[in-house]
Length: 206
Image (cartoon, rainbow, N blue to C red; front, side, top):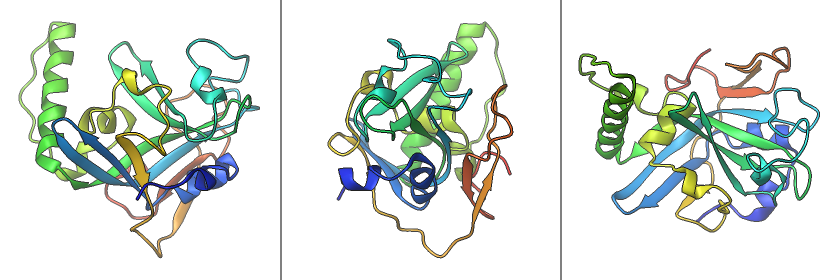
């Protein structure tokens, strides 16, 4: 059963922390894939690293939607990241899902990741040796989990409470949470807005 709207109405930092241990699920045409959320990042309206920091645009519009609205954006021309709107109508905040511990559909995830790697190689005109993807590599980082879970730009503006992409209640309990600084940004680097499950082998970086 997906988490309800009430769950997403908590403050963005609390949501980022409390999503840890919950399960991200995609019931797609190819089958069901799922993974436990083990790493997140929050982006707040007064945060210079937040896409909504300056103003509302066509790109960041989902961040200004109701809580639970899915925000998928492109980075580096080839990769995507998935976020959940968290501030409420007109606020401009979101939580980035950074890493999953895969639990269902691992073979399908691996197929998708390999296919994505091949597309990227062709885009850059390069050829690399085939990689064997271990379970810990499938959803290790925001771009990897998007490929593994078959999350696409078309999911932008979907509501996570009522779509084929949704989040189920926590199945991981009694763990320690590390709160630290975020990764891959140039501003707001000092803000401790990243959360991950301590000691988990599936996080993107300690």
